[in-house]
Image (cartoon, rainbow, N blue to C red; front, side, top):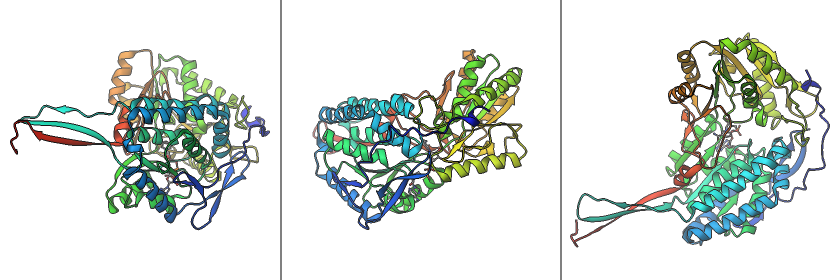
Length: 500
Ligand code: NAD
């Protein structure tokens, strides 16, 4: 296999200096109250990149206090929308001026491809800020057609202080997916990045200040889930928690929200998304999309197309082509522009994926390719494809969050719809066919929040994104995400001076 021999030499010329390692509270970088720090490591080799301030409950209290003051008395929620938009556009300019540095921070923290960070993740973060900057002065309610002699209208007001808890797979992307619409809505916030990937969030906090976001509006508390994260979800003075991560932790967040101050909750979880390939699909495009579906961002994508269903007439050809492409995929240092799959985020995730692969082998699935680590240093795993799997196999049911695919054969449309829906998740699905009637029929039958026809991972700022079933609730992106951070107030007054 060629990727097994891929060069794992390291490209260190892009590795940036780490400038920001402290908590960002009320516009200042500060040590944690207890003075503790934790290590963040480079997944290319496991080496420590920096020591980061470890926030805990007391630090969350300080950050919430700053956000509360900024919400109750500060300029941000009261500022005219166009002025907020101007500051957000300046923030976007600064992101664009720092594309290389931000992309490099995500590469050494998360193992993401530097080339993809530069071309997609970071520029799209700036675009997302501009999208919501443009919406900030278009937030309005409605005049109501009341049924009596009353004049009624609604206002859309910011929800208040938001706690954003985010995962590690798209550090800069997730930061702006949460922060940009909440800013436009006029909220103030505390962001807790994942402990694996704190670097770009702190860098972005510094850019926010430079852009003119008032102190206290954006606070970043780095630290661990059970301490800093849990202090956010159970805080009495946070109005809403917006969480993206695992189902297990999401359940804890919802419970903590309910038993503290009943704060609003928005939850985004993982997935086990199906990609359905009908026998009229173009084989080259279909195999490219299928492979990208599990190797893009080394499979650490909540919408990874990890269950691939191929119609029987083309199955043999599809399998042969797919395996050849998987074996030729360049895996290696994410700073190398030729590489298409970097290392898994950390040792824990790396070991979790390898143990799923072992589980697959024990369950009797056929390993078509991959299944091993690459090299002896860092967290590289070969693109891995299993076939002869059953729907109730653990590798077909669980989200693996790595470059591991279950490849399956199907006969009829009815059968594949049933099998595709046989999951507790309902995040995304892909349908590949030239028959648009078939694509539309299947789209309506799949219980998932986003359906891609003849494409995959086709995200857009304007396209709301979130899941069905045990995939959480609330939407990110689009105007739906803006409305999530707004609440509706009704105002009523009599028309003819009658008291009711
Ligand atoms: P995780 O749930 O372990 O962690 C996510 C965040 O929650 C981290 O910031 C973590 O520190 C925090 N956290 C952990 N314990 C907590 C607690 N008790 N209270 C409050 N916060 C706590 O998830 P992970 O392993 O870091 O990320 C991978 C998961 O995220 C996968 O399941 C993946 O599918 C999901 N994900 C979903 C999306 C999406 O948009 N839907 C995007 C990316 C990742």
